Length: 64
Image 1 (cartoon, rainbow, N blue to C red):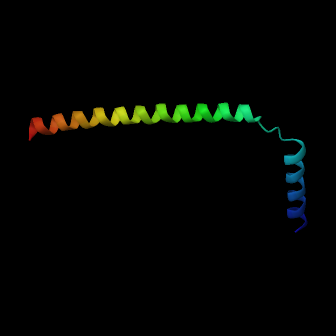
Image 2 (cartoon, one colour):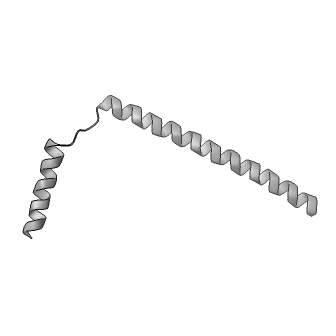
């Protein structure tokens, strides 16, 4: 039980005194980068899906 108590004390101390939290502006910029990256990634997957669908539809109509 003492080890758990010591762990909690050390964790609290580290969060309060040693952790450097990002500024509000930095956090907003990082959030925008993540959103933009997610949109680009989603659009790339959407485009690949559409291309693959068109290819399979063409192949299926060719041999149907």
